[in-house]
Image 1 (cartoon, rainbow, N blue to C red):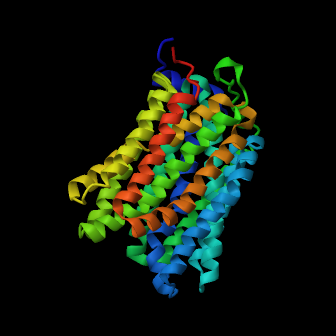
Image 2: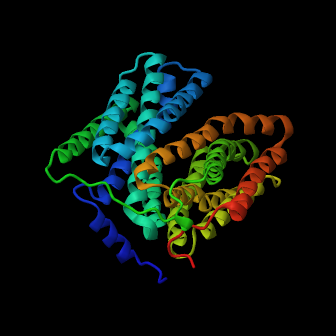
Image 3: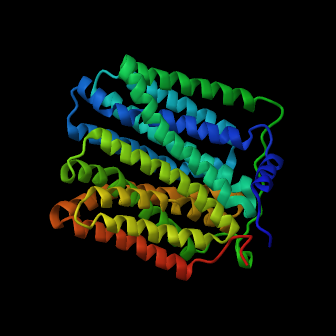
Length: 404
C-alpha cells in the first residue's frame, strides 16, 4: 500500500470533523496543559510565601498525581460519551478554579486542594485529546494524529512553566496564577459558546484497524501496552525529572541555569522524537517505531550508569528524550485494536497504569539509588524498559494499516 502523505492526513481530519476542528482540540490541550503546569515553576515561590517545608512541597506534587489517578478512568469513559468541546469547556473551568484557589491561598490546605483539582483537569484534558485524535486520524493516520496530540501536550508542559516564570519574575507568583485563571476561564467561555452552535462537532467515526478483525484488545495485548505506559512514565518521573537534575547539581556541580538549559534541550528532543515516531508508525509499522523507542530509552538510561561526566549526562538526556515516544505509539496500537466507541475507556486504563508508574517511580528508584548506588538504580530502570521492548517485539500484533 502506498505511504500516506501529510496532505492526505490533513484532508482526512478536515473531512471527518465539524465545528471543533482538530487544531482547536490541539490548541485547547496546549493551553490548558500550560496553565496546569504554571505551578511547577512557581513551587519555590509559594513555598517561601506560605512557609511550606520540602515535604509539604513534595505533597503538592503528590496531590496533583493523585488527582490524575482518580480522574484517569472516569475521564476515559466521559470522553467516549460526550463531545470534545464540552468536556474541554468543563476542564477549562476546573483549571480556572484551581488556579484561582492557588492564587488566593493563605495556608497549605488550599494549595493541596488546588493541586488536586488541577490534576483532575489535566487527566480529563489528556483523556479527551487522546480519544479525539485516536478516532480523528483513522487507521492510516492514527500514529501521526496521536503525535499531534502529544506535541501539543509537550508544548504545554514546556511553555507553561516558562511563561509562569517570566510573569512571576515581573509581577509576582500570585498575579501569575491569576493570569492562568483568567486565561483558562476565557478558554472555557469560548468552548462553551461553540458547543451551543447548531453545527455540532461530530465524533469522528473510525473503523477498527486490527488485523484478524480483532475489535476489543485481548487481555494479553492490553497488559503489554499498559506495561509500556508504566515503564515510560516511571522513567520520566524517576530519572528525567528527579535523578537527572540531582546528578547535574551534586555530581557535576552545575547551576540551575545549566541544568534548565539541558532539560530544555531534552524537551525539544522529546517534541521532535514524538513527531518522527508517530510518522514512522504510519509509514512503516507500529512495532518498527515502538520497539526502537523503548530500547533507545533504555540505552539513554544506561548511559547514566557510567561514571558521571558532562558529556554522558547530556547524551543521556538527549537519547532518552528522543526515544520517549513509545507512549503515543502504544496508544496508537491500542486505538487500532479498539472499538472507536470505547477508545476513551481503554485509554483511561492505559493512562491510569502509567500514572501509577509516575507515583511509585521516584520513590522506589531513588531508594535504590541511595541504598545501592547509581549503577544499580539505572540498571533496574534500563532492564524494565528493555524487557518491555522485547516482549512488545515478540508478542504484540502488527496493526498498522499501511504495513505489508
